[in-house]
Image (cartoon, rainbow, N blue to C red; front, side, top):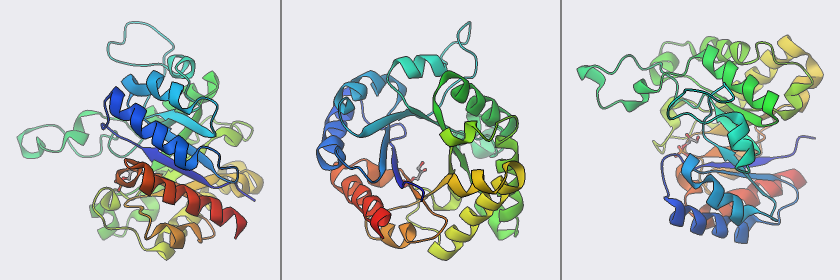
Length: 271
Ligand code: 13P
């Protein structure tokens, strides 16, 4: 039985004061949940503030990104060790908003700032390995673009991302890994992926993991769905065989709605 997870990715929202208020609110509504893991991922500058809020609660903290070197001349970057010492237990790796699959930042796509961050399958793997080596738990994100889905390439894209992400990661390490399927076209659009289809792709992710690291690792791996998860659709998603939780953007920015999602995750553990 896999323990459900509800993770809030706050993205570039909440300054330190707002982050404290939100984290305190999450602790109040979800701080003593036993049957599900609850994770909040604030911006890097709010980590120490949020660490103080979630201390002595069941709420764990994650960062949104890391760099794979431990220290050195890498202006603007933050290492796994630094995140750990700030109180992180988890770190997101390869969120679609950081993957550079959107072309270059020329005039044609100047509004598409996702192009500037440039994570690739190879750098996502390096980040996940650095996280594991430091004792952080990576939440590895994957998912197809709208154009890839429309071209019928969803499975191919997702399988390639999973295989690349798992390079040099052992079966033992996988106990500390979570995967998240986030179809890019469903993120922040209000367009949730149909539950059966989300379940099918999460099952494909599990089958891919089984092919690389064996059935038991795949059976134990927690696979989340992300993309417009809300209180009114979470129950259906959590009821799916291969969906073990949610990675949530917009609905994680209010303690009440995130609390509802956490309660749905907890209820799914009983069901
Ligand atoms: P939304 O829940 O706002 O669609 O964002 C999903 C996401 O990207 C979480 O990482």
